[in-house]
Image 1 (cartoon, rainbow, N blue to C red):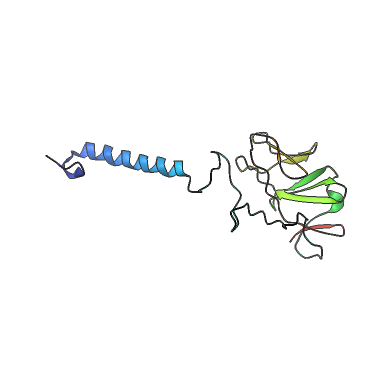
Image 2 (cartoon, helix red, strand yellow; image 1 turned 45 degrees about the vertical axis):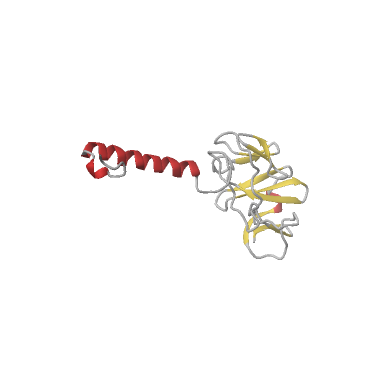
Length: 166
């Protein structure tokens, strides 16, 4: 009687099926695991993690928009960002908002649902047209799904009338 581990005694057609099923099973296992180690729902992306396991947003921890003092990559003049609205900077991958007069915020322009770049800011929300997700201009929180996680914050610096990426 042949050992069940010994595929050498199987006819060539059976060997191909066994090998094919093994490859499919391995692919399914790798796909199911996802490799990220978190519990992100299928179809959603996770922001990178920092050393503490939290989202690495690159934002100052005190909730401010960064320091003044120039330097960095110029994004816009403060007058370019409408109060209660904002502007998407596709090339830089950020969206800058002004929820209230003089209060500037920045978030990743990548939707947390499936990674599309958000299209615009209108009526108090940052809008992704791929699947209709909407995020609050004040804090990036989800206003309307299918996204379930907020936009990660981004670091900007406001000095005088200049908004820059540090």
